[in-house]
Image (cartoon, rainbow, N blue to C red):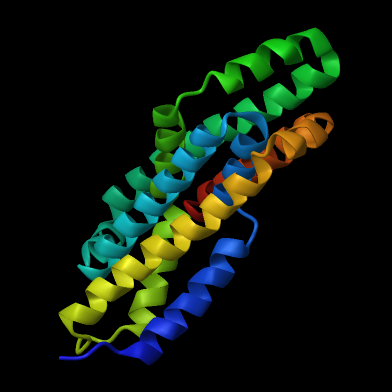
Length: 214
């Protein structure tokens, strides 16, 4: 059996466009890369890539479709995801408001950000994507549209590896570029705006999820 290169190319193009689109994943990496240590931002990039890989495996094996088909289970998944995204979003908005209200408090927040460990960065990246039901729906739609039951195991393995490598490369690139000391220093004044935009993105996704439940 041989790899289906045309299918891999199509998925690579679509996934690259999706990665470059503004969303919670992109916002999280920008936030961490400009406000924390480089290793924390890179760990978050790895967490996002692992989560995307898990979504890929769940979709390719049909588990995601089973979850989506089970109404009560899917509602529970959406509520958990919405709660996490809302918590992250409101936290980021609170940081932005705190900055504009009390600049001394900003120093405390900034210091706490720099103390985020690589493990905490990884968990944030993993949770942000894995708990986002919109990501699960995206992969279900993508794979059900492009992948037929006749696609061989080798191609499915290649798809999984491709999703991981593209995701890790993209988010790591952002983390490496924005975590340079010179760039972090220049972005320091924009910290509250970055936090506000990040928070609004997370909250907006939360509202879309909640709206879909009713």
